[in-house]
Length: 542
Image (cartoon, rainbow, N blue to C red; front, top):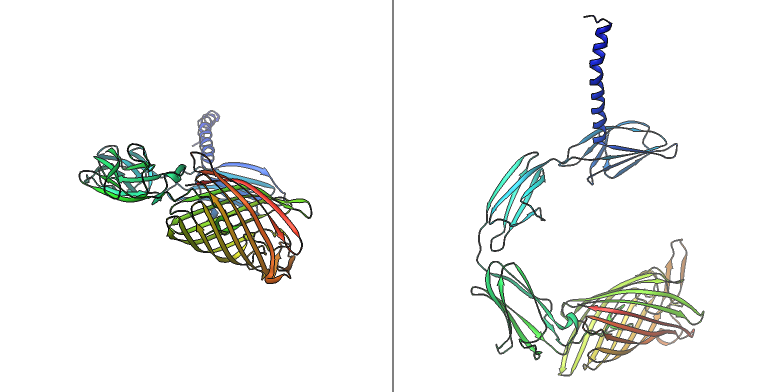
C-alpha cells in the first residue's frame, strides 16, 4: 500500500499521540519503581546507593545478590546494570541503573505489599484482637499474604486462637463463637513479703495484684494471725486485673501491730490467699552502694535490702590531690542494688570522671547475706561477696587503693541493734591497681570497718579501710606503650594506704527518696600523699 503526501500527514498525526502516551507511561513507570538522585564525587570513583520504604529488601545486580537495603555499593565498573529489589510479601521491582565515574546515584524504591483482607465477626462482639501478638483495634484487617495467628480475648470467655492463611487480593470472613468460662481468681501476688508501715514512700506500703476471669461480686479481706478481720474492700469484677495498695492500717486508719497478716480475695465460687508480714524493725535503707555491694563509704556491709526491694543511687563529687594542689577528677556515679530473693543482692556502680585524670570505670557485685536474730533488739549479719570491675585509666597514683577494678571476693560481718550498726569486712582483689583485670600481678587486701547511728529518718556513719598490696601493676596503652611498677611498699604486711571518712543520709518526707553527703580522704603512708574527696547525691528505693 502506498501513501500520498496527505495520507502520510494523517498517519503521523494519528501516531504522534500514541508515542506521547507511551513515553509518558514509561516515564511514570520509572518514577514508580525508583526515584533517582545524583551527586558529584571523586572523578575516579563510582557509588550506587539503594534505599527502600521497607527495611532489609534484597538487592540484586545482574542476578547476583549484593545485600539488603539500605545498601551502598562502591567502585562498581562503569556501565548499565539490571537492578532487582525483592522482599517477601512485596512486589518485586526491576529497573536498569547507570553507574558512571565521578557520580553518586541514589535510588529510592517504594515496594508495594501483596496483601488481603480479613474480617472478624464474633460472639460476643468487640473482643480484644491480637494479630501475631500485636493488639489491633479493628475487626477489618489488611494483612500481608501468608499465615497469621489471630487471637481473640473477651472478659468472661476463653481465649480463642485461630490461624489464617492470607492470599493476595483476597477477602476472608472469620466467624467466631467464643466459649464462656466459669469465674475464677487466677493469681494473687504482693510486691514484697514484709514491710514497715512507718517507712516513707513505697517502702512503707505493699502493692497487691490479682486477676479474675469473669463477672462477679467479691471482697478483699485482711485478717490477723487469730483470724480477726482488720480490713476489707468490696469489688464488682468487670475486668481481668486489679491492684490494691495496703499501707499497714486497719479500716479505721490505725496502724496494725507487728505480725503475719493474711490477704484473701474471694467470691461465692472462688478464693485465693497470700501472707504479708508487718515488721517495724525494717528501716528505710541507710546504706549506700559501694564497689563491693551495699555498705557505707567504701566498706561493704552484711546488711542488705529486703526481698524484692530495689535501690538506685546517683552522686556527683570530686577528688583532690593535696601534693600537686589540683583536682584529679569529678566523678558522676550511678549505682543500683537489687534483692530478687531474701539474702541475695546484686549491685553495680558505673562512674564517669571528668578532669585531667578522668576516665570511665564500672563493676558488678554479687553478695549473699544471712541475718541471725540473737534477741529482740540484737541481730547479727554475715555475708559473702564476689566482684568484678574494670577501668579505662589508672587513677590516684602511686596506686594501691580500691577503685573498684579487679576480680575478687570477701567476707562481711555486722551487728545491728536498730539504733546502732557496726560492721567489719575483709576482701582480696586481684588486679585492683591495673586498669583491666589480669593486667598485672598486683593483689589488694582490704580490711574495713563501719559504725553508724540511725533514727527512723536519718543516719550518720563513719568508715575506715586499710589497704595492703603486693605484686606489680601493669597497663598497656592503645599506642602500645606499657607502664608497670610495684603495687606495694616496704611497710609490714604490704600496708599501702588508708581510706576513711563519714556519711550523712536523710529521708525526704513522704517519699522514697533519700539524700546523702559523704567526705573522706585517701592517705598513702610512705609518700605522705593525701587525696581528699567528697560527694553528694540521692537514692530512690522501690
